[in-house]
Picture 1 (cartoon, one colour):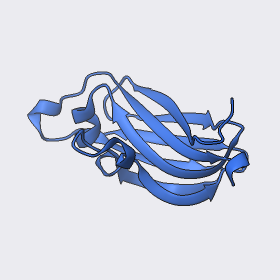
Picture 2 (cartoon, one colour; picture 1 turned 90 degrees about the vertical axis):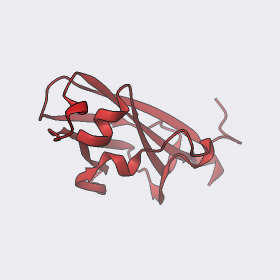
Picture 3 (tube, one colour; picture 1 turned 45 degrees about the horizontal axis):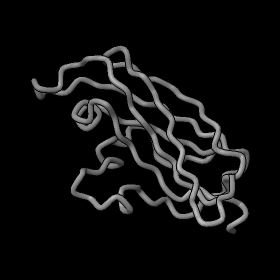
Picture 4 (cartoon, rainbow, N blue to C red; picture 1 turned 180 degrees about the vertical axis):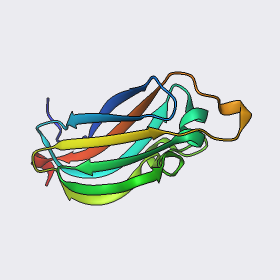
Length: 132
Protein backbone atom coordinates (compact mmCIF):
# COMPACT_ATOMS: atom_id res chain seq x y z
CA UNK A 1 0.00 0.00 0.00
CA UNK A 2 1.28 3.47 -0.83
CA UNK A 3 1.22 6.02 1.97
CA UNK A 4 2.33 8.92 -0.23
CA UNK A 5 -0.57 11.16 0.81
CA UNK A 6 -1.85 9.39 3.90
CA UNK A 7 -0.73 9.07 7.46
CA UNK A 8 -0.83 5.63 9.04
CA UNK A 9 -3.73 5.10 11.44
CA UNK A 10 -3.62 1.98 13.60
CA UNK A 11 -6.07 0.53 16.08
CA UNK A 12 -5.28 -1.79 18.98
CA UNK A 13 -7.82 -3.16 21.47
CA UNK A 14 -7.51 -4.17 25.12
CA UNK A 15 -10.27 -6.11 26.84
CA UNK A 16 -10.90 -5.30 30.49
CA UNK A 17 -12.62 -8.26 32.08
CA UNK A 18 -12.21 -7.51 35.79
CA UNK A 19 -12.64 -4.53 38.08
CA UNK A 20 -9.57 -2.92 39.62
CA UNK A 21 -7.17 -4.75 37.32
CA UNK A 22 -4.31 -3.70 35.08
CA UNK A 23 -4.29 -5.10 31.56
CA UNK A 24 -1.09 -5.00 29.51
CA UNK A 25 -0.96 -4.89 25.74
CA UNK A 26 2.08 -5.10 23.49
CA UNK A 27 1.59 -3.92 19.94
CA UNK A 28 3.74 -3.50 16.87
CA UNK A 29 3.29 -0.45 14.67
CA UNK A 30 3.16 -0.79 10.89
CA UNK A 31 6.62 -1.49 9.46
CA UNK A 32 6.27 1.62 7.25
CA UNK A 33 5.68 3.85 10.28
CA UNK A 34 8.60 6.21 10.86
CA UNK A 35 7.39 9.04 13.13
CA UNK A 36 4.63 8.68 15.73
CA UNK A 37 2.68 11.92 15.97
CA UNK A 38 -0.44 11.26 18.04
CA UNK A 39 -2.59 9.01 20.21
CA UNK A 40 -6.33 8.74 20.89
CA UNK A 41 -8.51 6.51 23.06
CA UNK A 42 -12.07 5.34 22.62
CA UNK A 43 -14.17 2.47 23.94
CA UNK A 44 -17.38 0.54 23.61
CA UNK A 45 -18.15 1.94 27.10
CA UNK A 46 -16.77 5.51 27.02
CA UNK A 47 -18.21 6.40 30.41
CA UNK A 48 -16.27 3.58 32.10
CA UNK A 49 -12.99 4.63 30.48
CA UNK A 50 -13.62 8.29 31.30
CA UNK A 51 -14.26 7.71 35.01
CA UNK A 52 -12.38 4.48 35.78
CA UNK A 53 -9.39 4.37 33.44
CA UNK A 54 -5.74 5.36 33.50
CA UNK A 55 -2.73 4.06 31.64
CA UNK A 56 0.96 4.14 30.97
CA UNK A 57 2.11 4.14 27.33
CA UNK A 58 5.63 3.48 26.07
CA UNK A 59 7.11 3.54 22.58
CA UNK A 60 10.05 1.11 22.62
CA UNK A 61 11.50 2.00 26.03
CA UNK A 62 10.57 5.68 25.91
CA UNK A 63 7.66 6.75 28.11
CA UNK A 64 4.97 8.71 26.25
CA UNK A 65 2.49 8.91 29.14
CA UNK A 66 3.38 8.03 32.75
CA UNK A 67 1.65 5.46 34.94
CA UNK A 68 -1.67 6.77 36.22
CA UNK A 69 -2.22 9.16 33.30
CA UNK A 70 -5.98 9.59 33.21
CA UNK A 71 -7.72 8.21 30.14
CA UNK A 72 -10.11 11.16 30.01
CA UNK A 73 -7.15 13.32 28.93
CA UNK A 74 -6.65 11.20 25.79
CA UNK A 75 -10.33 11.04 24.80
CA UNK A 76 -12.38 13.48 22.75
CA UNK A 77 -16.08 14.00 22.30
CA UNK A 78 -18.16 14.00 19.14
CA UNK A 79 -18.21 17.80 19.28
CA UNK A 80 -14.49 17.84 18.40
CA UNK A 81 -13.86 17.96 14.64
CA UNK A 82 -12.61 14.59 13.35
CA UNK A 83 -9.21 15.92 12.27
CA UNK A 84 -8.54 17.21 15.80
CA UNK A 85 -9.36 14.05 17.78
CA UNK A 86 -5.85 12.98 18.67
CA UNK A 87 -3.43 14.09 21.33
CA UNK A 88 -0.34 15.30 19.52
CA UNK A 89 2.91 14.07 21.02
CA UNK A 90 5.34 15.78 18.65
CA UNK A 91 7.23 13.57 16.23
CA UNK A 92 8.75 10.52 17.93
CA UNK A 93 10.85 8.12 15.88
CA UNK A 94 9.19 4.73 15.98
CA UNK A 95 12.42 2.71 15.95
CA UNK A 96 11.38 -0.93 16.12
CA UNK A 97 7.74 0.16 16.50
CA UNK A 98 6.98 -1.62 19.77
CA UNK A 99 4.21 0.02 21.81
CA UNK A 100 3.37 -1.13 25.33
CA UNK A 101 0.22 -0.07 27.17
CA UNK A 102 -0.66 -0.76 30.80
CA UNK A 103 -4.33 0.12 31.25
CA UNK A 104 -5.70 0.23 34.80
CA UNK A 105 -9.35 0.06 35.79
CA UNK A 106 -10.13 1.54 39.21
CA UNK A 107 -13.39 1.92 41.15
CA UNK A 108 -15.07 5.32 41.04
CA UNK A 109 -17.68 6.65 43.50
CA UNK A 110 -20.12 7.60 40.73
CA UNK A 111 -22.91 4.96 40.99
CA UNK A 112 -23.50 5.13 37.23
CA UNK A 113 -20.09 3.69 36.39
CA UNK A 114 -20.15 0.29 38.06
CA UNK A 115 -17.83 -2.20 36.45
CA UNK A 116 -18.86 -4.37 33.54
CA UNK A 117 -16.49 -5.86 30.96
CA UNK A 118 -15.43 -3.38 28.29
CA UNK A 119 -13.03 -2.76 25.44
CA UNK A 120 -10.52 0.09 25.32
CA UNK A 121 -9.25 1.05 21.87
CA UNK A 122 -5.96 2.86 21.34
CA UNK A 123 -5.32 4.65 18.07
CA UNK A 124 -1.80 5.56 17.01
CA UNK A 125 -1.17 8.01 14.18
CA UNK A 126 2.16 8.05 12.41
CA UNK A 127 3.94 9.33 9.34
CA UNK A 128 5.39 6.75 6.95
CA UNK A 129 9.09 6.73 6.12
CA UNK A 130 8.55 7.65 2.47
CA UNK A 131 7.07 11.01 3.56
CA UNK A 132 9.93 12.05 5.85
